Length: 157
Image 1 (cartoon, rainbow, N blue to C red):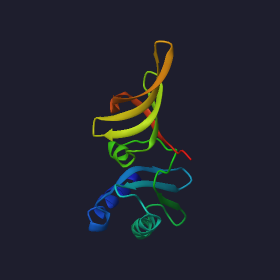
Image 2 (image 1 turned 90 degrees about the vertical axis):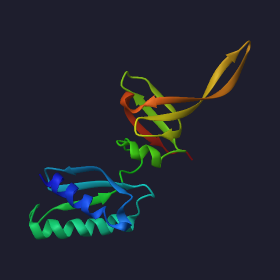
Image 3 (image 1 turned 180 degrees about the horizontal axis):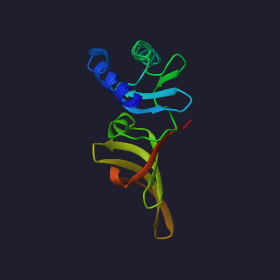
């Protein structure tokens, strides 16, 4: 399958010094001969880096004839609004507001303050009743990645 060939090429490219902090998020081959390649970088992906990777892939696709003469190749970061898929993506987004949907159906929104390969820590402001008054407390909750159905970075202005 073309996805595996592209993944193999990217893994080779990511061994180069300039690309060692890059990683694959997703590769999608659509029926209309469109190939979408979503990549990310620990230091943030740039347009120029995506362009160079796209040219690298095009060279192989054209030479090997994997997609024929007419195809569309898009290389980009997943962008805001797309769910986080890999633990490595969470680490990049520490300090950002995250909306997390759980497998059991509930959802929480808070600031991502920590992330590792097994869990994230979300910081939330909660209104707590203390006697007749209410006060705001900040709580941190550790959430296992296995409990997360979907997590999306929320942009605030």
